[in-house]
Length: 33
Image 1 (tube, rainbow, N blue to C red):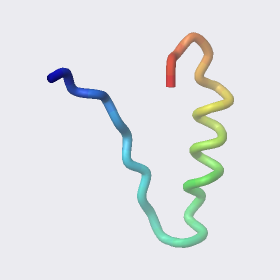
Image 2 (image 1 turned 30 degrees about the vertical axis):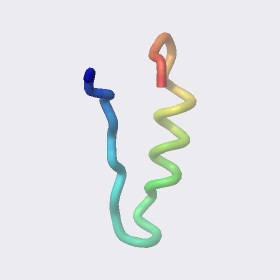
Image 3 (image 1 turned 90 degrees about the vertical axis):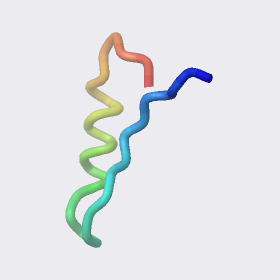
């Protein structure tokens, strides 16, 4: 069985997790997510 790379994003309420995730997804040019 092959492993699937995954990233876990954690942090306190209001620490900017959603903002970081949106930025990573919008700037991930040429990468498959």
